Image (cartoon, rainbow, N blue to C red; front, side):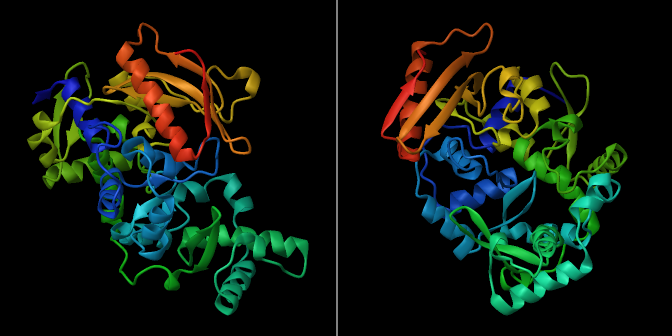
Length: 384
């Protein structure tokens, strides 16, 4: 079977929530849950040039919504939990058995072999102190840990992170974006861990749920809980092909094999032509696999936050521009909260792309919509 690359892209956009214009549907708890189940999760990140990553990722699809309502779905109703998916992420609570399997096997083999892990981990005594503290005093932030010496305090703060990875503590809620930890049994529902095979297969099955038809290379690093090496990836693919959970095919313009869930082949021709203009968060699940964006959409993206300012090509927190299903450019925005100004420093379009009047208007509308979501009272931008 050979399928057109254009069909692969249309389905990919639809599965990622970009098959319709931003704001065509209002964000509800069910749509939030559906998004997590389909894409795998929302990446969390502390960089706040515009807004926190998971808030911005949902805005790109649904437009402005109530953040407090979203927080309530996560931390009050427990429809999601914070753990490792692509990186640290909000994950659907139905996937907790998979998370528990990682917790039980923490640290991953690759981590244990890394020199940094010995420095990153902490002593059993420190972990015991932290667990006793949580048991006695209840939920707390890292900053609230105070021990008899600065060395113990530093180690015990680090132990919170290690214990979170091990599943012995959990993020119970957020307080002004800061994590509040508690004992895991007070946060997570009582469920059994998934099997090792289910956990490993999730690398493949979640990648295909979020992307549709994809090659092995297009799945690497989309889902990093787990992160199988090449030999294990081959075994996972072979096992799921034999069981009929996935099928293989060719995609026009590519030599390597692609894979899909059977149900995605049934709906391949039904994916709509994407319309509308929106901006993507740098941590959007649509960009988790940069090679896929480069090979299917011709868009080479690199986050330059960690690049020295003098060596940046496009800017600090550059947001790709998605227009009618194409990544046509990128812009460098900054929210100045003290003054209420949303500033767009520069706008770049891809080589060979000439912005149409539709694109110009769509981009202005997207920025005005973003300003509303961020609470900006003023908007300045480069000439489009």
